[in-house]
Amino acid sequence: MPTFAAIDIGSNSCRLKIASVQMHRLKTLHEDREVTRLGESVFQTGVISPEAMASTIRALKRFHKAVQLHVADKVRVVATSAMRDARNAAAFTEWVKATTGWNVEVISGLEEGRLIHLGVVTHEVGARGRCLLIDLGGGSCEVTLSDGGRIKSMVSMPLGAVRLQEEFLRSDPPAKEDVARLKQFIDRELKRAEKKLGTPRVGLVIATSGTASALAEASGHVRKGRAASKTLAKKRLERVGALTADTSDVRRLADRLAKMNNAEREAVPGIGPRRSEIIVGGSLVYASLLERMGQKGFRYSPLGLRDGMLAQMLAEVDLRTSVHQKIESERWAGVLEVCERYGIEQRRVEPVRQHVVELFNALARVHELPEEYRLWLEAAAMMQDVGKFMNHQGHYRHTQYIIANSEIFGFSPEQRMIVSAVARYMGKSRPDPLDRPMRWIPVEEHMNVTRAVVLLRLAVALNQDRASAVLQMKTHVYPKRVLLELVPGRGGAELEAWSLKKEAAYFREIFRRELFVEVA
Image (cartoon, rainbow, N blue to C red):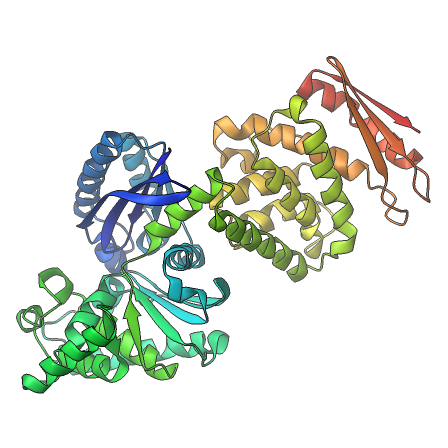
């Protein structure tokens, strides 16, 4: 019964969630949250201030104690918008590593949105239809169109509550001209989002994060007097306790908040002392976004990034869960999208994929690779030629760069680096720990990457004559040697046999076994 811990280092706050696997489901054991304002100085100066670093480290030390207390088997730590923008992000990640031993992943806005979407659709039944997800954090805002639990389109915008406060609203109450400039900026970003999302027709809008919670709680108090209280009570009763907000109420609230000072905003029910400092920008974004996209309102969900992280960790260890199938499907769709973008014909690379899977299964006793490397090899086989889109000469280097820097849903940055490194060494060069692609991969994975490279090189060698039918192969594993017996297709198998024999020396170097090739 493994236990997982997910830590989200956001621009406004740090969050921890620890859960254990019980009957193929996650059961929450512990949650914690600390407002650290990591992005406050970043959005002013471009660097994380020493004070913000120290505050965040204190929170992470407390999280570390909780993780140890619950004996978590796996911990994943991700950082979002502020760390994406900070010039001194590397210094902070080193401090975290020295203090806790944790490696911090700085994820992109789209990966952030994917994980939030995964967390919501895994647990929210209503999110499995056609819906719109909005997550407005401290540094960015992700909007996702989902249908049937799958992402149809997504945008990430620099419209986080802390960012907008620091960049536009420096006085209290905000100056009219500053609010006007902020509204223009929001309008510009939403126009860009509209080009990708259009005006989506959805049955439900789900909003996550603290800004959405505060707006849902406070919007019902916009109307004064007893009538407002009755309306609010009726809403809560009709929606079975769901925290919701209508677009018209959000607009009224946003306009009111923009005219208040901090003390007045703090007194609004549902907002509170820390949220009042950053609520103006976030409320204006929600009001404008809902109006522009023609939505009647939203429903708040307490789920978020950390829930998606936990769902992914569950999927990686429990192959029987529905979320595992979802992530696998999502990953493969991402691979095919990259292939299509760079002009790779699936029918030309599919035989290589088939052969690398066959080799992975048949040589399991030889390579001893973790199970997940089967997918990494399949992905590398499909995308090995994407670098030709840039230049045929030295295209393997271009391939590595494209895969490592592409947004492929379902693959973490580290996993993309592994896939890119495997695809990189299909030419004359061999993996070296000092190579740039290898330096970004954990040292403990270097041998696995090298072994995977050998398997993919064999699969490529088996597909030299693209005009002939796919070769059939029989694999025989002996204590000191491996025999590959080729069954010729229409074009024979001499060229493939010659190519495989060229890989024999490298095979022997890595696996300490002789490689023999025979044509049946």
